[in-house]
Length: 507
Image 1 (cartoon, rainbow, N blue to C red):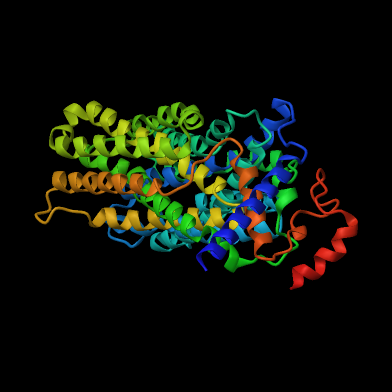
Image 2: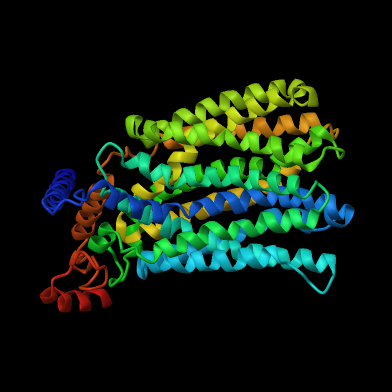
């Protein structure tokens, strides 16, 4: 019995190697000139700038609403719901568009999510309800939920397409380019989400609060509008053209057996990362406001918030090439461990750093903490999610992992408010937040050790391995790929095989 099982395993490994060898014999994807190959990567991934901007600007908007309406806002449900509700919409968008990007179209899913983002960001900026302030808060909350759906679509449709398109770039740079047009875009969105309210507040003399928060939200329409025009020229990525399950009945049980554990680990790491990062991002303005007190002008609070958010940039920009040198998994672990060390140091020294006289030192240490988070999980968790599964289910796999991340962000925005000292000491309460976050960093680094190694050709090899697995289970892999005329570039199914594949898809 033992030898029989051993022989079956050897035979399955040989089949897998044969399929990988056959895949390597296909026409190589890495053949386009740089300028021709890079613009689909940019167009697909850069939409995540809106995620960073829209999610970070709401922290400043919430602070401004508190200045404008006082206790009417701070004592209302809107004070906690407005900053967090977009995360709920993002989860819905990630799951829905994850399915659509696999079973319908990467390009069209992107266009629809971008249109949703444009429309509802504009509506949020113009929120109004018959002159009633509380009603206006409720309308703003509703529009923010739909904005979240548009943002959610950017993750599975945009990032997945970006990862697949990066395979057409030069080896040794693919991870870096993916990071620069996905996570780096989010981080630049965070910076502009802090800087724009500062500029607007300065222009509005720190007193025209309605102008400040509405203008800050409305500017969020500009970037996705420009990107929408660029995306009209996109084609489906070649990896998707070759390995799509659009015309096949997805074998979910086989997918779960092959990728279930891996998806769980990626999802947990993403949950932990977003739990801390988005919570700190949203409440950084509040933390600074607490340091300065209620008397601090908005430009001062927003200005230091911009400085803090700028520290995301060196982490993501320096970390991008590091991911090509060390590999995404090892870079993630390195960043998590270093972030935990800085977080524990900051927690221990918080009492000294939390005085207005040393706010510059606070901004630097806090900024290093955030920067290391970007070098590690910020840059690499999306990369791992995009490249640890096969193309046919990549949108759904990525969407589920990203949704778990946003659930972590949603939970974090509520939990962080509850992490307080029993005696109500604000200094101790802030220290506890850093202790919790740093401990989670160590846990996430340990989880990352369970993930496979990612190299430059992982997407192509992963498709070949999964194809071999499906064939070993008796699934007809001739169903994979788009049909003639659907992608405008690669014809994956010969016409004489299409009729044979169709009945198999119904089976």
